[in-house]
Length: 420
Image (cartoon, rainbow, N blue to C red):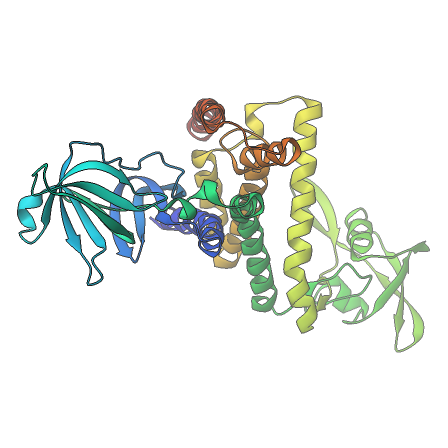
């Protein structure tokens, strides 16, 4: 049960930030957001506020933001439709009842002759279904279409995704991956504060464990290690590697303390690590406790992971692709189970790394991903006009289908690795 909760927390947080990025920039651009959904499958919670429905679905493995003009679900009022109309005080249509008119006893009957609910915002027809009483009404920008129990806001064209400038559309799409990186920065910075500081790669002795080889030899916290057995030491990694290679061998540490160089002999203890015998002396890595270090740690760690992940992607391209290089929901679930056993802070670290992975993957120039859409925007910028929406939609549909096939293969491979 703990693993399930941890998995939902990790995936839910990552997906929420990704979709919130799309949502926030869509709103700032004036795009009508119809649905903000976390998860896929059946609804388990839905709440409508103003023009957006907020939904939580059963399977916490994704999410989406449904923007006006992107779903192809706009209702068209064709000539001959018989509808009911309700009006505001300034005589603009606020409700158009397509089905279920009996429940709206005050609705004005109208047989539609023509209507435009996108640009001119009007509805025209015959009042009381009498062809001698032709009328025309203006439709409010926030009018509602009612089809039985389903209520849908009309979508004025200027509030659709496609009506916005190229820059606003591109930023709305890019904001999803961007917010994944922002989440990682926030988590890493929080971890720096929670742990009291940031480990630094200085050739300095951090905390010294009681009764350890270092304590017995006389090393103290704050000692600056200049050399070990005559070999110059520049970083903490240099200290760790030198000590690890010399278990049970006396080492001569040249350390600077209070402005003076002292020579201290230390004999590393033998320790088993990954089926190898290594040396350890019982000292911790030095830590920077400053406020600036804690804040900048979020940025530096996020950038470090970004470069590492791109390095892995490069090796996948140049060194040959294998399904074992990828993990789907099952693989992430099993990894989350292991990470969760080390505590909440380690789980947060794992969340940050996964968030960076999701951001980078979504920026890949593949159809159906954010990067694929950005590629079409780049083409539009160079060409001077957008690609035919039907052609672009077909490319994304085929890309999505191929991604689903890949996801199935990756999931099956994860199951085999986990259970067989």
